[in-house]
Figure (cartoon, rainbow, N blue to C red):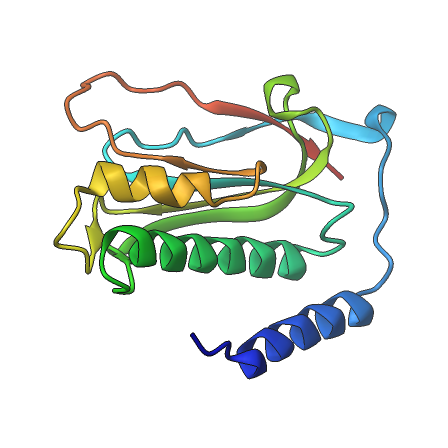
Length: 170
């Protein structure tokens, strides 16, 4: 197995450049929290990637977005290698993106200053014919950082979920 070093070096370089060029952000304390904002609920008929990127790992929204997409790409690759004979796994059409926005992760998410970022898309995955979407999503989720989770569509549930309450930061 040959390791392709160039893509790894380019990725590391881009992270360093993005992080280094960013202006020093204002890191508000918990006492500086703005009023609680309501983010539209995650539509139950869609699949979602929901990230609570710690702001000590990503000083800017751009870096939070890059970390999220890099983690998703890596998890897709690993799941494709494990279950699909090395085939790249893709998503269906993206329907909505929220964020990244500065927020305070809820207690169940760890209670830390974060970037909230949600990518919603039509249910299902493309590319893998040897495993069910459920198995592939499980394999992907096993390879994601703890701040990023997969929420799959619940098409059989006619229940409308309430608005997500996210404490926004100024």
